[in-house]
Image (cartoon, rainbow, N blue to C red):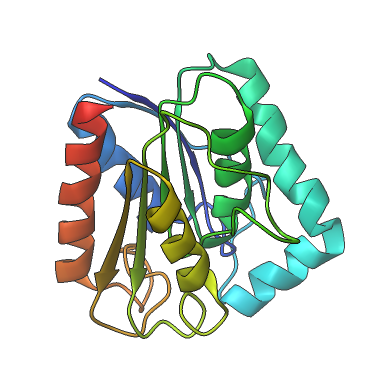
Length: 193
């Protein structure tokens, strides 16, 4: 069974993020769900991003990275949207990573936002909707395709729809069918890493 460090999105550690983690736990995995917002949740992505902006994106990302210092190195790093920032940084830079699960967002592995090349032997799955204005419209899909083209064990899964937080069962953007398929693919990934 895998041990996972799962980072929430910009609306916080919502009941839907907790439920997703509980589904992984029910399958026998250990899941850590740190609350980077100290109990705060937000009604919209914009409100959450404003809070992150007040703290500072780099500071918030590094808050997540420091949490890993208290855990063993052999982790699968997972993140929803904003949570991809610490998850992807850890997967790419912390020795011992067993894998990465990137939901709704993806950073490039070259250029200004990159943490460097993807490490050998670290599998990755990237999940997003094919008409999500953030994932597609802001270039995350291009970064995801760059990873899939250059990393041996990398998969990009696109789901039909235009929602960003489609796997968070506590939000109006939830898509039950897409979330069920995403969860099945994640569990298959975790069973092999």
